[in-house]
Image (cartoon, rainbow over all chains, first blue to last red; front, side):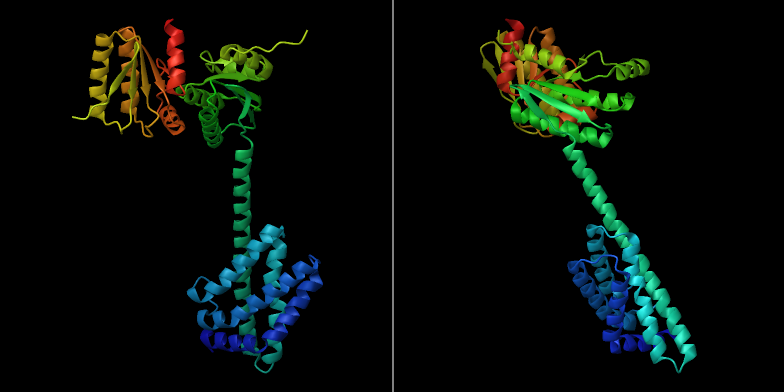
Length: 286
Length: 118
């Protein structure tokens, strides 16, 4: 018996016993009870039914050898959607994989009943179905991982934007409190948001506060100098503040040249300088 | 031939670059500007590039050179209105225009010039 015949038999079998297999599968899954809220149970049932409905056709036209072909498109789309939803809801990878693998038990049961009279065919069919479900399971995990990765990338981007606020301290004075390590990508974002804000507010001075930058090496210093140079081209002077004692030591040991830039130990000192530059003064009431 | 107009305001010269700068236009501007500085006895030059969204290394160097020439002729140059994207590009190209004064817009550039030679 060839693979094709097998595929036809099994496809017909699944089609025929779809309802029982589905019910058994759902019962299995619910027995494992990873999550018990009713909304997700309803969702689980829907996912099971949808996937099972697609299996016979795909098996019939696509065979078992590979799930890359056109015939398996719909099944792959369905699995992508399911694992995408699961990734968003915070399911673990094993939960997601178990969803597919648990179908084995129900399918095997059904095959055993129907093919009891033909042991050879049964063995072959079991092997076929088993490898098929393994492939589908692995595919699901892969997609699951991908959607998790996407979530992480998106969060990184959000973090990037959140962590670079430019605040207006006074008329013509901006402050840029930097928190976290400065790499090239962040420098780009910092530079862009600073320059946009300079245009928006018409500020003449920007104070870059590096209290929250854990280390300053030559690369970070270079990124800072680039930002300052760009701001200067737009007509705004920069002051660096919040230089901690260790950082001052590192800067000197590394031989970083900060001669062209005004540096202050604290944001308050920098603010006083900035106020003097724009011609404002603050005084305490007598 | 295409030329960039140079306007005289008191003892300042205002150059507003509104079109895409190609290399020959830049060279013509340099010639015209140096001549006008001498003829009008200008004390300051404002170059407004707010309409430029593309500046390459040649234009960058040309601006830097123009500022140096103006300085020789005893006029201060202020480059005004640079777009953020242009500023980032120039910095990435390594052209930080160290000898050129900059301001955010024409108004600020004028007050900068006013302060520097009064």
